Image (tube, rainbow, N blue to C red; front, side, top):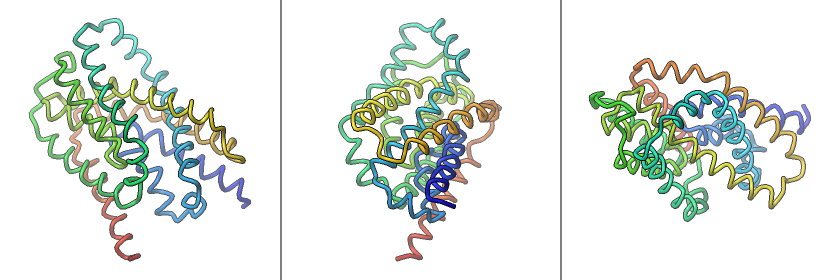
Length: 269
């Protein structure tokens, strides 16, 4: 298989994985880095970090577009019934990650974007999610207030650390605040869209300014398309999560994956 065909095939595989990984609280960005590392895709490891980050932006663009289509009814309903309190919740959930991301994005990526730190993020985030899920389910999404928005914003800021998972962090924060699993997931989706759209738009502008590296246009397009369609095809995952399923199995998966990574790192010392 030629290098171009191999790159296209791997872009397709990562894009197909990105959709369900984004909808589940397992860290899509962590998986995009760890799966090639575990499978020893040398080309991925050797690629310039900016190229890898640009590819991840392409995947997020595909996912964001699919989410806007898949959740359009919910988004329209939320916009129609919104009030000042809901605006405060969304605004407060956005301001903190936007500010911290603007100031610290590069240092975080440079120092915490490696396999070991991603594994730790997966494991710590998984343990926190399982612990938070033990809280009583007492509140509905309509009860969300400004203080909840501040907690969700802090959670999304923590998710800038690779492996933590934005979805996982906001689910953890919402469950700690006493929201039911279904309503925690709904809140997680609602506060996610502005952050995903804003971050993707900013990075696309940067990418447009610097241009695509030579030879990456086709893999990037394939990855974005695969991410778009896999997200659309994975929206049933949302329905599955909202059936009041405990989060412990997902937490166990995160901890298991992180353990595999750390064990391999230890064996390669």
